[in-house]
Structures are given as C-alpha cells and as structure tokens.
Amino acid sequence: MKTEKIPYKIYLEESEMPKSWYNMRADMKKKPAPLLNPATKEPMKAEELGAVFCDELVAQELDDKTPYIEIPEEIRNFYKMYRPSPLVRAYCLEEKLGTPAKIYYKFEGNNTSGSHKLNSAIAQAYYAKKQGLKGVTTETGAGQWGTALSMACSYFGLDCKVFMVKCSYEQKPFRREVMRTYGASVTPSPSETTNVGRKILAEHPGTTGSLGCAISEAVEVAVGSDGYRYVLGSVLNQVLLHQSVIGLETKAALDKYSIKPDIIIGCAGGGSNLGGLISPFMGEKLRGEADYRIIAVEPASCPSLTRGVYAYDFCDTGMVCPLAKMYTLGSDFIPSANHAGGLRYHGMSSTLSELYDQGLMEATSVKQTDVFEAAEYFARVEGILPAPESSHAIRVAIDEALKCKETGEEKTIVFGLTGTGYFDMVAYEKFHDGEMSDTIPTDEELAAARAKLPKID
Image 1 (tube, rainbow, N blue to C red):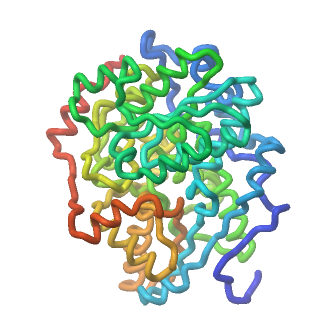
Image 2: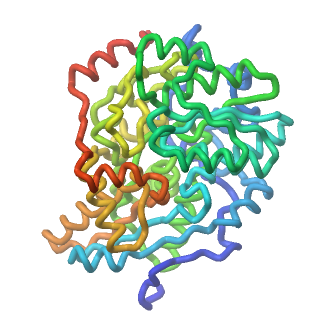
C-alpha cells in the first residue's frame, strides 16, 4: 500500500484506460424489465428497435448477459484526446468544511462539450457511421448532450439534427451556438416542424417543453428520414454501458492508493452519469465482493425516484417510443419553467430503477436554491464552476461531509462532477439576483400525470 500523501489529482496512464465497457446488468440476478412495444405490449424485438436505433446499439441495449464489451479502437483513440479524466482530492473543500471526511470528485469537464456526455456520443456516432447512415437525430435538455453529439458527428462526418428543450434553447444561446459551430441544426422543442410537436403545442399552449417532448420530435424525424437513426444521451442501457468508463477509471485511480470509498454520490436525471460512475462499485455489490452506500441525487422539481412510481411508462411525451418499466412521474409531466438546474426527465433508467427498487442504492431530492448555494461555495473553494446538474451531487457530498464533522467519522466520499457551468450563467445570474425560487410539484400535480400511465396487465 502506498503511504505517501494522496496527490491533489490522481491520473491514470494512457495504457491504464479501460479497453472494455462494463455491463452492470450481467451481474444482476433480477434483470431490468424489457422494453415493450406500445401497440402489442410485447417485449420489443431487435428488428423493431432497429427501425429507430443503430443495429450495434440495439444489440448492446438488449444484452444483459455479457459483462464486458470491448471498446472499438477508433473510439478508444478518440477518448485519448480527453481521457483519462482526473480524480481530484478536494483538500481545499475538506479544510473549509472542517470535516474529517476525505472527499474525491471525478471531473468529466475536460472537453469542449464540457461534460461526460461525449463518452457515449462518440460511441453512438461511430456505430452510425459504421452502419453507413447519413445522420442522426436527438434531443437535448440543458445542452450538454446536443453539444457532445454535434462534436462526435462532426468528427465522423454525419449530419446531426438536435431538438432542444425550448426553455434551455432560450436560456442558453451560447450552448446552442457551439452545436451550430460543429454543424448541427438546432430546433426549439416543442416545435411546429413535426406532427407530434404541433400536437403538444395544441394541448399545452405556451409550454416551455421537456425532454419527453423533444424525444418525440427527434424520433419522428429519424423514422421519417431515409438514412437516419435516433440516438439518446441518457436513460438507455447502451448509454449507461458507454458511461461505465467513468466508474472504471475512478475505481482504477482509487485502487492505485488502496482507497475504498464509503459513499458514492451522483446526480440523477435519466441516469447516464450516475450509472457510469457507480458501475464497477455496483458490480462488486451485486457479486457480494464489497459494499458501498450509493446515493442518487435528483431535483425536488423533477423527483422521479423519490416521488415517482415504479411502472411501465412511455419514454416520451408524444407516446411514440417503447414503454419502459422505470420510476416515473408520468410522461405528461413537464417540470416548472423556473427549474434551471437540468435533470428534467420524467423517468429514470430501467437499470437504475431496478437497482433502486431492490434497495441496492438510495435516493434523495434537493431544492434548486440549495443546489446553487452549494455550486457557488464549491466554485469559490475548489476553483471550478460546476454545471447545475453536477451541483446536486455537490450539495449532498457537502451535507454528508458535515455529518462526518458532527460524528467525527472519517468516511471517504466520492462524487461525480459531470461538467462545467460556463453555459449556465443565466441560471447563476438568477440565483445571485435573488430571482431563483424553488418550485416543487404538488401531490395533486403528480397524481394527475400518473393518472395517464398506460395500463399494463
């Protein structure tokens, strides 16, 4: 065991980067429920999913037996431009808090997209190019996924059509322009350019949109355009698979210094960052090799795990996508326009939902103003301006460290810092000007959305 002081940043060598992704589902005794065809209510077949997704991604989506899937060399070479990403010991934060806890964060903001999303975007673009497609369509909420996918498509010479949640489109013009710089077309959603967009606007006049709306539009365009497929930045099993590089690198860095975390914390919207971060640690839990306390942190404005129901639901507002069994608020649920902290999806990854339902991880929700208070504190202490999404994890990491201060316990805390917040300054401005408030859905509002859940026997 190495006894020297743990460095501020633990870097892996290029040769230590993962050569395979890790598939958590392979080690799950009880597997996530299958996707269902919304018309027949039968499990989706590969050929049915192939009309929407790339063929290789369909195979990854349905594979719940193979624990390790090799990362193609072309993708690994792209990863090398910004990976391995650092695991940082937050010495300054520990000192300011006066806590005996040891705090580490895995920083995924070292690329132009400013987030972890590029890990899956480059993989999905690679498989689309390999299949000989012209381009792909997608949705984006805060803009990280759309930015990452535009970069990946530019690299492989693919067309990229992005439907961006309308409130984010209006609040984050610079994120939109980065996408356009990389050649993507960006449409605010819901829009008048698709049948489902027009239907949503007719039913919800003046709506500021949701990820569910944008997904519906992107799928419609993909299915109706020759040579195009739809790609998704979170929720799906294939995305959690690609994001496992985060957790695999994190564990390898910790193992270098024989560090075993007690608490692992990630923000949770659709589940890509959280699923990627916890993957090898959850694998050890599933195999009975080790135990960890794993915490999913979601916004109180969109609390799918903490206030949702575990049921089959549409993945999109337009109800054109397959049904997934997940913790959901209802596909008709649209977060308040006042919610600027990202993580706006109505449901949660089927894999993470099943793990949560089995009690293998816990969840908590935090208010928006508390999140931005933690974000500002972290920026002043650690010198990184965090993305609002990441700041949900920061909030709970600080809270857990303060609990250690009260009890005197020397716990080791690891959290995911998914990216930077430089394109989120409108939200920071509202916080600083005192114009940000906490809008939390009422039980009646959630009940109304849940009432529209599909009936599955």
